[in-house]
Amino acid sequence: MEGHQASTRIEDLQLQERPRERLAKMGASVLSTAELLAILLRAGVEGENAIQVSQRLLKEFNGLTGLQRASYAEICAQHGIGEAKAAQIKAAIDLGRRLASQAPTDRPVVHSPEDAADLIQYEMSALEQEQLRVILLNTRNHVLGVRIIYQGSLNSSQVRVGELFRPAIRENAAAVIVVHNHPSGDPSPSPDDITITKAIIEAGKLLDIQVLDHLIIGQGRYISLNRRGLGFSDAP
Image 1 (cartoon, rainbow, N blue to C red):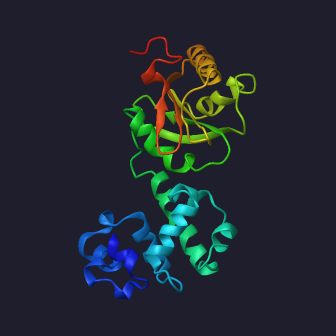
Image 2 (image 1 turned 60 degrees about the vertical axis):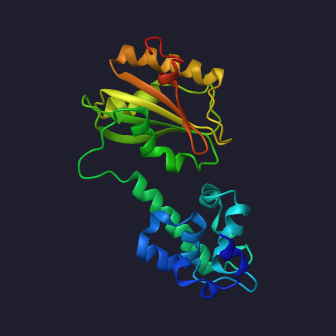
């Protein structure tokens, strides 16, 4: 908004352009990420209002996911961001992460790759290391839990398929969805990803545990190997 750039104080903006007033009148969904962040910061610095400081932070850290990945100390080091503001930012982001991962009273149900991605994408897209998790499901595809199996660089020779199914056996899961992330942000599957998927599916058949999908999480997007028919011989 041009009015934001021309002003160095929130107070100088028209009342209807101020983030808090807009949120109160129209709801948080109409605000930009920078405006929401500005509400947390409350005040700017000399020459920059809170919105402009927020825009600078988002640019410096390559968006909200970058802020999630950044350490408390890295945020503190930014001009105009002291310990209190850095703490507010990290607290707000983690509240969002906890809300995204919190199960309702009734167990969530997975009907599609989108449902599975919604459970873990917010958190896993911000990880700096590769991580492999399994979503455990009962016979009605209700989620029994999500378990971390591996962390670090993954390839077909490192992943022990038995380890992957251990939580499923322990919790009597009928099916699993395998999920791992690509910290590079590009979810395109590698040959190793496809090899691992085939091995997991075959092991699942022996254990009578269905492997419904293998999701790869990237930056703001994901890929379903089942939907693409990669490693799933009976995929449409």
